[in-house]
Length: 327
Ligand code: TRP
Ligand code: SF4
Image (cartoon, rainbow, N blue to C red):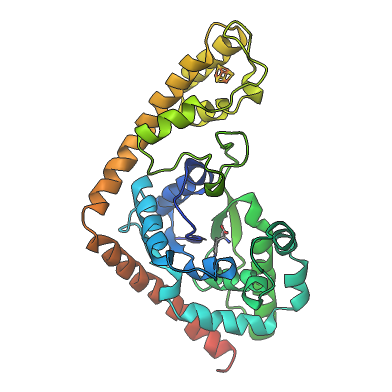
């Protein structure tokens, strides 16, 4: 029986942090073992909002591929490619735009939210409104069963599924309806308690060395009510504890919880445990990154090979699409 297929992408807007790892990449690394997997750097999608200054776009694409390789995405097990390398995606996007009602796009909650929240750039563009049409094209061109995404992407995926139903209804069954493979919610608060984000400078990045991380962790907010070492703390309101849930073994986690609530462990010691676990987690990532970074031609080779694999899959779909639409 043919393997199931999966597709996912990320916009290259800067270095990835550990929230990206636990929220998405960990799942991708697992999926490449079971399925025919396509992972792409969504550089066209980055343009939907960051169109005004594209000077660092290529650099971000390469950095993102390095981040992916460092966590263990393996170009022998999956296709790693750049969205803009495959022109058929633009063809499919155009065809899907013919059958996508404007109302679907205008009612998309993510669209409305971002229009309101992002005030630093003008998002009144055709491309930004059409974001989900491009995303639908990215996905269905591989005719996948599964799309690993976070909760925030569900409205987009629902639009993809609606598009599939409409296409199949109009032209015949070409596409399966892809399902979300939700990444279990991993709580990764920023070091200051806000959302972890590049622009807040409150993140731990996959490429950070311990010398970058130590001062950030030392300054990290913990339980605000725990002023002295002798005050009992509450791990459930502490910013750091969720990281023990992700990185520490069970015994350590229990020990920290007991030490914190019983005031036998101070935050300084707790942070030391966190730093040790982080180092253990990041060391193999940094080793892999260094291997790939040592040979700059390697990223180009990986993207070229990924493009070949992705093209084969997409060309097969596009032949069906053109046939179904009598083009
Ligand atoms: N919209 C996704 C995000 O912002 C990125 C993305 C683009 C994507 N195309 C996709 C994700 C296709 C999954 C499948 O994170
Ligand atoms: Fe947070 Fe650890 Fe301090 Fe408890 S001991 S408040 S879990 S940092």
